[in-house]
Length: 251
Length: 200
Image (cartoon, rainbow over all chains, first blue to last red; front, side, top):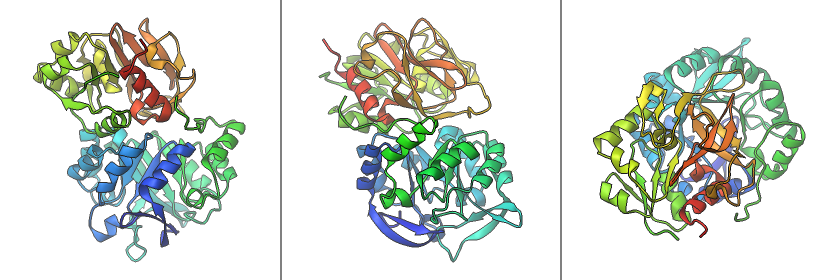
């Protein structure tokens, strides 16, 4: 999201508006999404924080877990977001700038609240971390190898890792299963795949090949090309354990 | 419909999602540490996110240990709140409230079962309980935890990570869930409603 609306780009560029936050959140929650992640992609490059009024609006409406990413640079930032009803906070660039932030957040709120977002791509045969990825003009290599950074972050108390595979983001050719498999070896906490989903088979593949704990996608859901109910029925039929997409009838 | 609902403030963030869930069910709950408010409420919820030792310290500092032990109205523990109702927790070896027998154990680390356990797990009913009325056996609930109570005579439903553990426990007027009903979609809402509006 940027400036209060949901946007989506391709390989972190050329973002277009796809909808209103609460409406989309409600739709995905009704369709059976297991968790929602809100990225404020403008936050870190501008050196400002997320506009947080919407966090309460989302929390009031939806009854599945959600995570807020973007501009969380301090205990106070995280506390505000969690107090407004978010279940987790995800940090990326601020953690690279100051790894001690992970430690402090985990001590204060528990490791389960602290998600590490990692933007990573292959270069010269190894995987490297990138930062400031919300703004193409500022995106830069973080001078860290992906698996080394994840190991350090886990030692510091990160409780979950979302790996955004930049080569694949928004191009819908499938998740970067090879990279995810490599990272899986180093990642003893839940690992969420991000970047590249274009077809329902891609979700099957990433669970079967890379053994991830979750698969995150945006474009295919925003465009309604993939319906979460169909996706879950398919994954179930392929022998992957998923929470069935419920109908939202009152029980 | 139950009248007043008190949420015991045991510290930690993330009470908002519980309050919002109660709002959606038509209840306005007060977040409180005041013994008289807790004792006077029709329903009491003991939530908890964070470390057991911190939460117990906060309850002791607030003079709430005996207040909670003495409650006679329906009380619902959620997540860490469930572990606080037990005898003790392995987390920093802390003594808890001792209301429901059992000791919270750290989830074992095993290949394919990352700790903390974060996500949706199916819950299997093992005894009749009113809070699970109308909820299908095997329904999924949202868990976020590193410790859990092993199955015992007080277990009402179980779930599995690497090992089986208590997903719902109960004793007399106390009932508790290891998962977060406030974040568990329609089935979570049903559980909360069952707790707030028991069939007569």
